[in-house]
Image (cartoon, rainbow, N blue to C red; front, side, top):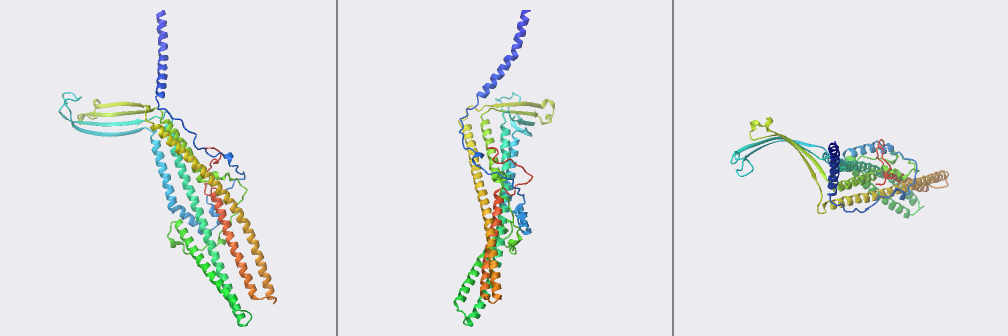
Length: 490
């Protein structure tokens, strides 16, 4: 009776001993990994608290923000550019490449399977491993086999690598979005500059007509002995200056048209008849009491942050290379010396090929690889910090310029109103016989000068609005939400 109890106790202890052996074997496997060198802290991302960003209402920017200018020619140019510009095509190819690499990375975690047929005609050795009846004979060895392999993601290495690859896909898509934003803003700025140049040419022509009228009056006064030829020569010099300015502006008009044609992927002469005016561009009014944290919708800043997160995953992958690697292989098929017996049951063969590799001694390769991935992560953080600071500076400068140009536009409007009143008074005095037509023409020329200043500041105000919208992430899809770029430190 006692011996039976002892046997039962020993049988109960046997599974426990097997469990202990399994634990010990697992500990031995893990301890056999290559030693990992200590990792330095590296570069840190900028802490949002250090930025002291102002808070304010959220500014809504439409993805097709240029439509607010209400100009059909401008909208058509941007649409053509977004569809045909080579820089956009290049950005799209980078997305496709990143997607392909992500698919390649994902395939590593999936089972691989293939089928093959191998026919080997050979002479067998008499002194080798083959039996005497095969030695010195010519035989045809035929193999029809299905084989496969699977590397289980025990420690999450494949998952981390795939998440990193997906991050690169998202970053490439954000790069394309940023390229579209830059392109559309560049076209609008060139269009505004072209419209201003066309307006200036009109004013110069009108001023030239006034000078011609003044010259005619001066000629009559000179004939009457009321004036000298000195004033007439001054008018000639002023007229020549106008011709020089007109030639320079006409050259600028050609340059702007060529630039817009190139941006919209057309031949240089395609827009030779494009003649917009500033009055054809609806003025945009932007509320300036918003928070600068809107940079969370800037594609370049979010792309830089996304690359930081992807590089952190790459560091995780490099760390997991220090762990054991397990793979499972299998094969099933037929093997025979007689092809007529290839599919018979007696020719069947199959097997399983488990494999375990331990990176015990690698000559420092894994640590060097880890150091490289860590350095790449630090580079990504440094690029993110630099992109963020540059974006903050750009947005702050654009906001200041927009406020200043709006204020200067208001002052110029007041100056033009005063010049118009002065012209009206001088006209009334002339009609009353208290002045002459020469003074009226001079006041009219002064008013044209104020009109030109007003046009320049109007163009400046529109351009500042474009730069402000661009700096705050113009082009970000309205139906796509993204966490604030400062909300989480990479």
